Image 1 (tube, rainbow, N blue to C red):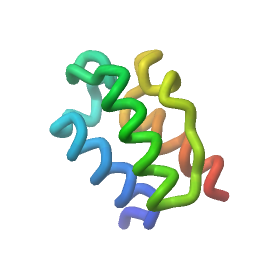
Image 2 (image 1 turned 120 degrees about the horizontal axis):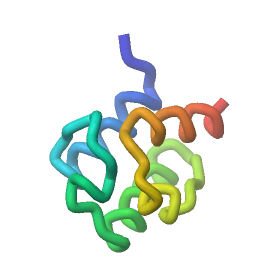
Image 3 (image 1 turned 90 degrees about the horizontal axis):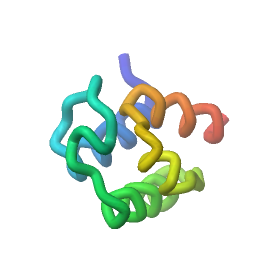
Image 4 (image 1 turned 135 degrees about the vertical axis):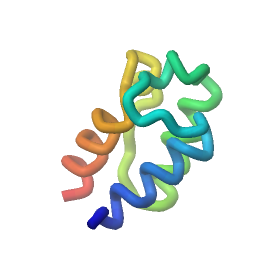
Length: 73
């Protein structure tokens, strides 16, 4: 069963990048604008601020989930 955080972060990731949980943000075609939008959407939905640069440094969905979950706790 997925948590509230997992559900929202996965929805944001899929909307921006089209899925592929094992691939990195860059491998899925993620660019700076997408990183900023994703970070803003995560903060809007969950109240968790992440740096867009974290996505640009090769984040995967799992790594993003770990980061957001740690900050949401």
